[in-house]
Image (cartoon, rainbow, N blue to C red; front, side):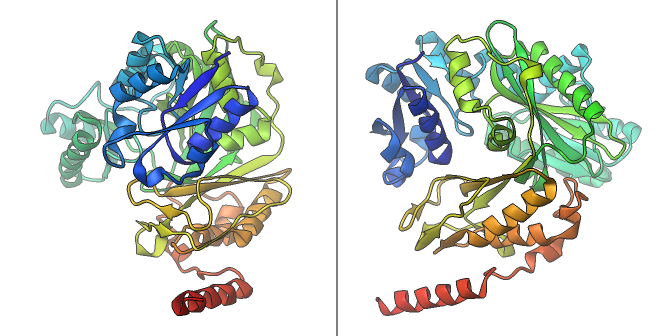
Length: 472
């Protein structure tokens, strides 16, 4: 087992990795920028080092990070998610410097990071893919011809990256031409290259992903699925495990396809195979995420398996001690991403000082967070500040528990998505499972929420504002 691990990330995922390392008896090294100097993860790590210059560059300089890792004597680097987690160059540099990268190989990251290459690999391996262009589009004329043959609507997609960038839906030729130009521009700015391809757009799909664990000895299992269909601008807001859409037969078929995809990619460590499921319950490979996911928490809650520990153990050369038949799912789990955003202003990020913080508790409630009272949320990073996770024995109990937990969750000083998420828990379509990836677009009324769920909470907030104004 490793003696010391450097976490090449920040925020709540850095805290999550530190916790797993502590339980394994591994010392931890954190990195931070000046705006992150007072962050929780910096306080929890055994060693912490300032990286720079600036609030972002230090987290992305692979040579400085690897030099630091060598200098402080770490055995391995955990990239978390975001930043360098899917940077094949970073993984390759770690490999060259004899530092274990806790994740798949640099080659696998590169292969799966190119969506065109991944599609081709899945097609050859017999994993269902959405009908699309053969490779990247070479000209507008080729794109128009494909769309005319496949039929609108189509989806323009960047070959690399993720997070909803470089994606555009086109319902006619005019939208297609504009969508290609916009997607190419976004892809170039975000990922460094402008290659795009086109797929037939799947109307009203569910976004279903399967969690994979694979060791270095050819053992691969899946830990069931997560439904990530509640999204805005192709970014997930609420995740559920297991999906209430799938029956056991479909779950088995999709799980087998996920394992087949992992084998085709020569995959090791933790990863996620993502699928789209159409209204007729046909499923298609979407992409493979070569890292731990934000929503790994809900799989942990229903299986009892610590995914971050498994990542570390696999990277250290340990064989999987779990067989597919050992994986048992119990009840349901749901995660709500708590973001410092104002949903009523098109989800505009809202940085600033947290003047009050009270997290929910009770049976079946988990918080993976990064903030506390008087913490100043920086404006430089992703707006997610906490993940609220609940589990219950039934779907109804899980929804009710999430509703109760959101009512208890208090964050003051900045706008958050808590009241918006609370409104979703009230919605009958959500409660009955009548949702897909277009759910929020069809529900503008969900933005008509009360800022405060409890009248007592409203009085407390007004009193705090008055006290702050008068300097009490």
